[in-house]
Amino acid sequence: MITFEGVSKRYPDGTVAVDDLDMTVPAGRTTVLVGSSGSGKTTALRMINRMVDPTGGVVSIDGDDVRDRDPAVLRRSIGYVIQQAGLFPHRTIVDNIATVPLLLGRPRREARARAGELMELVGLEPGQARRYPHQLSGGQQQRVGVARALAADPPILLMDEPFSAVDPVVRASLQDELIRLQSDLHKTIVFVTHDIDEAVKLGDAIAVFRPGGRLAQMDHPERLLADPADEFVESFIGYDRGVRRLSFFPAGKLSLRGDVVVGADLAAGAARSLARSLDEPWLLVVDAERRPLGWIAAAALDRTEADRALGDLDLVAYGHVFTVPTDSLRAALDAAVLSPAGRAVGVGEDGTVIGVVAQTDLGSAIWSVGESDGHDGAAAGRGAEPGEGTGAAAGRGAP
Image: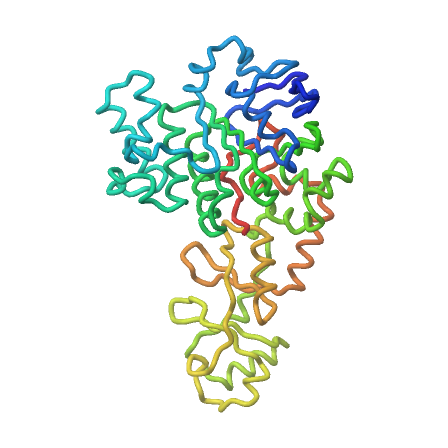
């Protein structure tokens, strides 16, 4: 556990980077520090490994003041990942990762073996071990940075905007990888970002910093979104916080309709009769393995020969699906909004269709979320107090 007690950082020119910070970072969880530039979040992070020393107050790890530790020894016991990976350009990937174990006196063979294990853990190929940093993509370099930070198996991992320099697709992949790693390793992670969506996706707790280095609010993401402490926090997290909050409610609670799902071999005449009996403007067409092919509009069936199979017709693209067992209400809403039929297609983890939910029915589910007291969010993995929550990977299916 990392504790900040009355911590401040004032520079000789009068600049206040951190002002009277009281904060507890729970062990084995991911705590994300967010705030605008100059709000003190990076300074607070760098106080943990003594890259910055406070001018007031105490930063402690498991009750021990970090100032009682030799800075070099302290830093070797804490993993540190920065924005540009900070790799040594003249060293191979395997030797970059092995840096800290070698500094700690481990034999080169053992250190390189550990590096190879970590490459696999973070999703790097064994054949990349002998390459140099410039021969890897930005996302791959960041994976190397994470592997290097984990090489000595530190209990604490500090991450200072590690994914901000890569494109959105790679960034999402790296976030997913970090969630997967944390679900296995249970490190104490302190993560700095400007991006509230990244904070909501990764954090078991989020600490929002005001300009001037004061802590505005620290809470679970779902509670932060549901009940911001004041206008500053509400403005910082954005006025679409209600949509973000849907990330914490599982799609598995939705009532899906299977009666509007039809096979590709069904004749248009029979499909027309079904659509009329259900008073449904759209039917979802699936193949023999119950995988989605597309939508057929009831109006189009009125103009189609009765004996033509639905699979032979020009179907409307179904957009993208959401995975019922693992995704959230936000993912379902996103799929419905982007669907030309105004309906989201829910599938199982094997990709087969479970059912369909319309935007109107989603509206009822979202209304029930708004009426809830927040405890339902626990089903999506974030229901306990900071430091007492569930695993970091739980319930993170939303986009």
